[in-house]
Amino acid sequence: NGTSVTVSAGGNYYLWDGSTMSSPTGGQFTAMGSVTYLDQYTILTKKNGNQFQWSGLAAPETLAGLNFATNESNNDDILRGLAVNGNVWFLNKTSLEIWYNTGQSNENAFTRLSGGAVNVGCLGANLAIALDSGLFFIGDDGVAYMTAGAGLSPVSNPAVESNIAQSTPTHCFYYEDGGRKFCVVRFSDRPAWCYDVSLGAWHERTSGANLGAWGVVSTVNVYGKWYCGLTTGEIYEMARVNTDVSDPLI
Image (cartoon, rainbow, N blue to C red; front, side, top):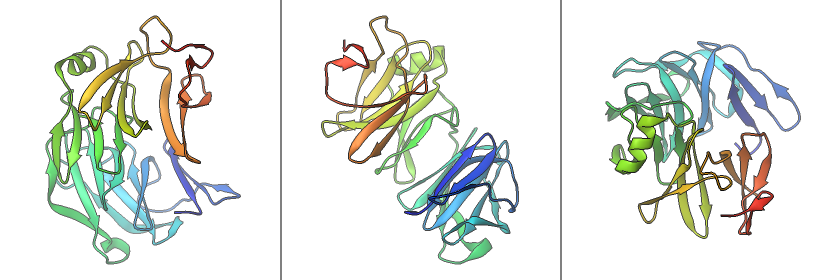
């Protein structure tokens, strides 16, 4: 929100206010699965559960016991909550739900969008990312989707879907290069598949020359540059140079 950072990790909720790290308590549940932010509300999903709760307005440190709701369509566990285009998408094991801010306060702040339920789930908590234009995620049916409004559009091809069927992806992430937007499906035992959103085309990417996994597992845009986090814990700037870390770029 410009002053605070919230993190959900290991079932815990952490708040960094610029100088101090704390673990706010209270609310409907204490085991957190994911965290997102919309309209000055911090929204937390229950780990291994079908509920989500939200903070006080512009108060991520305050979790009121009545500020919560439950999945209404399939009543399955929420894997991830992501805010995009003014709504919150809850990606569940076998379904999706879209909720929005009602403009009311406290326990009445959120309600489900009319028709905002889809019988497609998410394959894993790390396999969904938010873009400016919508969501990209791997469905529980092994298909890669992008959202268009409240609808879904499959974007994967048979080669991508064959790799998803053979080896479960570990992460999805997003980056931009040369004005192009890329959504990545990463595997631990084979090259990653990268989707060019503008072209609707896929290509593979790997680290080194042995066609193994791409070492990147996360990306972030900050200070006008794209940075990536590797499986080794290192952070690198993504730049147009002819090396891949210290090895030749092939």
